Length: 118
Image 1 (cartoon, rainbow, N blue to C red):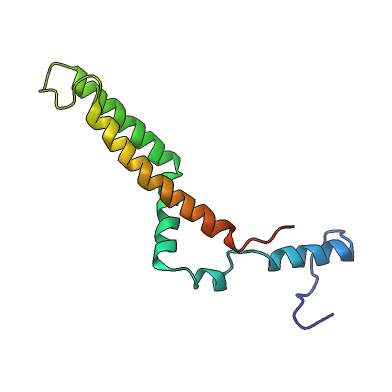
Image 2: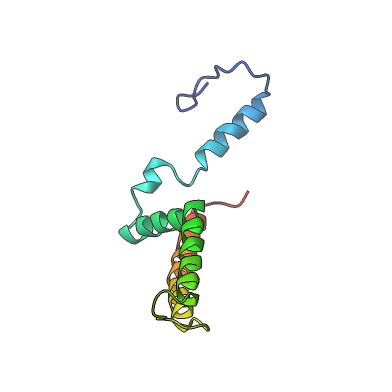
């Protein structure tokens, strides 16, 4: 047994080659603590934004805001600030899609940058 290899203490019945494969896969993890320290501020920001935008909470809030926007513009209770074709809404969604799309692409590039093919 080498010094850098952890002791084999599990009760699972696996072969030596399978155990060695597990150790090799553990070493290939691209997001170990040493990797995280090399991320730039932009990489960390893209990671946080992608985590927020990719959540169900964001999807539900986004859908709720869109329904609220459309409902308030179609009802006669208030002055219509964005009439039926909803040009302002389209502009806002296009603006959001442009920025969120580029941030997600940056995050994917960051995620797959250090992963090695099997």
